[in-house]
Each structure stands twice: as structure tokens, then as C-alpha cells.
Image 1 (tube, rainbow, N blue to C red):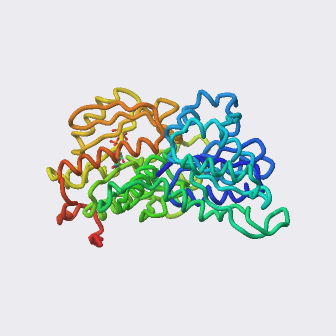
Image 2: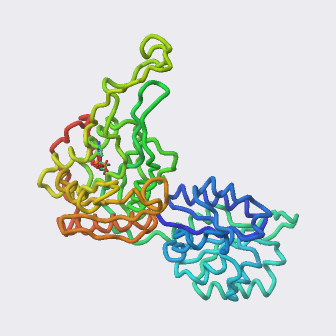
Image 3: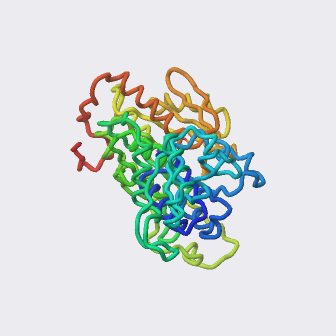
Amino acid sequence: MALIALGVSGGIGAYKAVEVARGLQQAGHDVVAIMTASAHQFVGRVTFEAITHRRVITDQFEAGANADIEHIALATDMAALVVAPATANIIGKLALGIADDFLTSLYLATRAPVLVAPAMNTNMFGHEAVVQNLATLRQRGVHIVGPGEGYLACGWIGQGRLAEPADVVAATDAIVRPAASLTGRRILVTAGPTYEDLDPVRYLGNRSSGRMGLAVAAEAVRRGARVVLVLGPSTLDPPREAEVIRVRSAAEMHQAVMTRAREADAVVMAAAVADYAVQGGPEPQKISKTTNGGQDDSERPWSLTLTRTADILADLGAWRSDRDRPVLVGFAAETQDVVARATAKLARKGIDLVVANDVSRADAGFEVDTNAAVLVDAAGATELPLQLKTTLAGAILDRIETRLRDTDPTEPQTPDQTVPPGSDGDLHEPS
Ligand code: CTP
């Protein structure tokens, strides 16, 4: 998954930028929208926030904005800056290096590739000033997509219409997709929480959003891997290229993982799997206050008996035993003694890498875009700075790539023939 900054300037095509944001997400990218002051005349920030699941950046002097790592890190972390629509005004500012708002400052601050999708009236587009400004940008290596020809909002027919959103997405994708370092590899990723049902309307869940696992899946896709994503109940969109297996409970996730682990070069268990489920499984009918004890007694407490779920990662570790494949990566959410506990987990589960994070920090762990992780393997612990989950996903996959190369410098290994315990027996042969 690449992080794309989508700059929206104030033209009638601004509403189409919503479709661009959506398309970029469907292509597996993470999008941060940046609106110029005049863009608000055409489309609301809430629309972009709802689609990108991120705060929209509108003002570089907004209270709190400069204390926010996501905001500051954008210039270095983003894989591309896309300006769609780009008005004659913004094109002029970019060409001249005027930095009087967040978007124009970001353009000067970043070394990421830039794509501009001009949209304006035909005469404006043909004006020598705009022609020269676009030529300047082109010479500087800025990519330009469109504009298209057709009926313009001002009533004219001619050149100036914003390129189709699908074309802007395709042009962006072509820029950010690097040489595929995981081509030929199969990566199994789990993401999201699991829900343990009590009855048809209630469940035990946890605060995992699925962001970390989805970031790993999208980054693996971007690097050319074939990705199977076993996804618990998450409201986020998985990358389109991944094969997604939706599950709900820990038991369903266990079966899905065990069934598909055999064909994987690496398994990344980013899901927050429930450690406990209701003993005997969910009640078939809704539990009511009266069925709980026979009478509606407001004083009567309700006790649930929970039993341990199977530890998927530990089962994978035991099944893989002393072989090299699949490489096994687990996560550890800790509130104290992070490295010591992660090191113990590495040995106990028989895995290759533990991504440990201190979930007592407000800026790391659940429901946020950033994470401060320590990578723990047999060689020791490496503390990583607070960074976007999309960047951390890259660091995890770098480790996996190194391990795959070290254990097999040539080709992906033949998948193991032993059947993992708990798989559904209907083994999916690599195709
Ligand atoms: N995991 C799993 N199966 C479970 C529970 C967890 O595969 N039933 C995986 C998670 O996906 C994660 C790692 O194991 O990769 C987390 O390890 P776990 O022992 O559950 O750690 P915590 O829940 O963080 O903590 P604790 O050991 O303190 O309970």
C-alpha cells in the first residue's frame, strides 16, 4: 500500500476528486486528502474524511496540526502527490514555487513524484501563461494527466475537462508501483478483530480496526506477492488484488489460516484474535433478562464462562517446527516490559519475528494510523520510531524478504506437504 497525498484545488471537477480518492483506495492505496481554501466552495471536507478515514488537511496553521506526526511526516512518507483537479491558479503556483498554503508547501517539501490533473476552461488552458507553467512542471519531471475534451461546466465544448478518475488512478498507480521484490511469493496475512458471539445479537470483540494487517497486505501486493488475507470483522476496505477470506470468530480464523498456510512463504498474524470464547458456543436464541435465571431480577448478576481459543500462531509454529517455511510473524500488544515479553513470545510460539508495540501509548496501537514498534527476532530487538502503519508494513516485509533470501537464495521453496492441524482438509493447491 502506498500513501498518496491527494491535493484538491477549487475547480468544478473537485467533486470528481472524491471518485479519485475512492479509486486509489480500491487500488490498495492509503489516501490523505488536502483541500485548498477554494476547494471548499465545491465539495465538503466531510466527504473526503468519510472516504479516506483520515482527517483532511485544510490549513497548515490549524491548531494541533503541527504536533501531529501524520501531518508532519506526510512529505517524507507519501509515495506520490496527486493534484486533481489542478486549476490554472495552482498550476501557476507550483510552477513558480509559491508556497502560501499546505498543498503548495508540501509540493516544495516533498521528493515524492508529483502528478497533476489540470481542469479549467478551454481558453484558460490554451493561454500562454498556463501553457508555459505546464511546460515548466513537465520539464521538472511532474507527470501530467489530461485534461480531456468534451462538454465543460461553463457551457463550452473543448479541452479542459478533468481526466476521468479511473485515468488519474491508473496514472498514479503506474508511478508508485516499484519493481516487485516479492514476485512469486505467497503471503498469508490476518487482520482485524475476531468476534465471539454470545447469542444472535451480542458478541465479545476488541478494538482492532484491521489497519495494520491491511497495510501489510497492501504493501505485499504492491511488492508483487500473491496475498491471501484472512479478515475478521473490519469496516475498512481490503486491497482489491488480495484474495480475501472473511471470518468472524477465532475458530473460523484458525481453520482458514491452517488451510492456507501450507502454500504460503510467510504468514503475518496481525489480527487481534480473541483469546477466549464462550464455553459451549453462542446461544441459538437471544438471551433475555428473564431467560437468564428464569425471572427478571435486576439484582441478579450474569456470569459467562469463557474457554481459551486455540492459539493460531503457536499451532503454526508447532506445525512448522524446525523448517524454514513459512516465515512466521506475530504481533505483541504490550503495556509493560515490551522487549522481554516479546522475546519470550518469540520462543514460546516458535516464530521468526515479533512486532511488539506498547499499546498504553495513545499514538500507537489500536484505532490510530501510527505505530511505535520494536522488531524482535533471534538476533535481538530493533526499536523503530513512531511511524505510519503503512511505513511499518514496509519494514516488516523487508525483514521477511531478508529471511526468505537467507533461507533460500534462489527460488521460492516447494510448499510443504504436511497438513497443518485444524485445516479443513480441502487444501488449496498453489495454482
Ligand atoms: N494470536 C493467535 N491466536 C490466538 C491469539 C493470538 O494467533 N488465539 C496471535 C496474534 O495474531 C498475534 C499474537 O498471537 O500475532 C499475539 O500473541 P498473544 O499471545 O495473544 O499476545 P497478547 O494477546 O498480546 O498478550 P498475552 O500473551 O499477554 O495474552
